[in-house]
Image 1 (cartoon, rainbow, N blue to C red):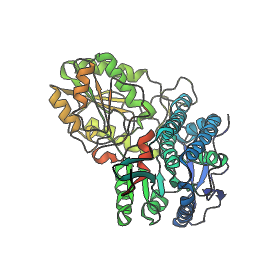
Image 2 (cartoon, rainbow, N blue to C red; image 1 turned 120 degrees about the vertical axis):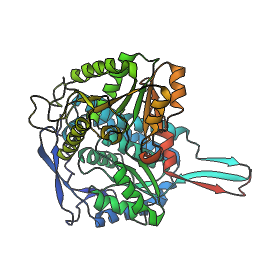
Image 3 (cartoon, helix red, strand yellow; image 1 turned 60 degrees about the horizontal axis):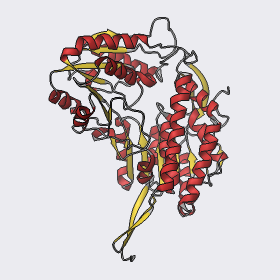
Length: 480
């Protein structure tokens, strides 16, 4: 298998070419979080590098947006085929930059990019670009230049969910992947080049949020910013974008509730909730991190959760037996440790896990899979996004209480309900979240994905993503 480290990591992709960055911002090491070793150096962009890419995207916009939609869909099909052909390289990149277990890197991280590009192709082939409403022609057209800022936790999922619909919509773009996990993003730029994407349509500049991200957000030639990341950073993006009144689409933090109803199979529901919370080492914004269980089941639920958590294998991502790899960095590790200690200090019951690395692991940013019981709704671990393998279990006395506490959060990205179908459906309608999943369904890549409240705005996936990258024009007096 190849290393997953692109030869272009020290360059940017601008106007159809790999170019040298300005020397202003320097470079930074890319750490493998499983070993704490620096595996590569990534060039960091300056405002000038961002400006160069933005102007290339602006120059390419008119020609690209006026190509027939069928040609843009055909281009995305070429991108898709080349992406699939490089599966081994992407898998290795995810394992190297994230510490993702190889099976998860291939079966979830790479897979997510594959299925989202495929779904966008399918949606693009049937998308209604214009329709008649009385005497008015309603037309969808590309919004202009988009700045795309993507995170480290699901790098290809988020790149695919932004780049693919932008291509189909006829929108040109500048992508800034996370500087913490830039390997897969640089490989994706190679895919775009090999696919023959027209010059300037897709550009990539690596760099930090305060440098490149802020410039994409504030530049007057950028018409839209699509950002995935923390709510804190999302507020900064929106603030930077406000003076130029650009569209801002955001998918931000979450503290998702998982309500287990009295009509559920308790053991299956609890075990599935632990698995859902701990997937990707707990580093998913829609992870079901707050589990609400009927008080009569609380003690038994803790036993089920403990057994499930302790059955998971944390360790070397290259070991086929491993379920959970490390978290992304030392900074993230230390944040999680502090919040686990906060749960202990505030009086929650530590069911399993706790502070420190798992036994036998002395290197790498490995967190013990941790379950807390008897969690009070006001505790820090019930309010703050932890972004690690930490589950809080909260007992409830009646469903009105569970719904009220589930909704009493700054966030509203996702929610989960387990129980008899008609029962679960009734509860789902009462939850203030952008996506509610009933009884752990398969991932629906055609469902709208996005948040209420401080979890963001806009919607991604398939045709929802295409709409996000379009403007709507009414041509009045067009005639029937």
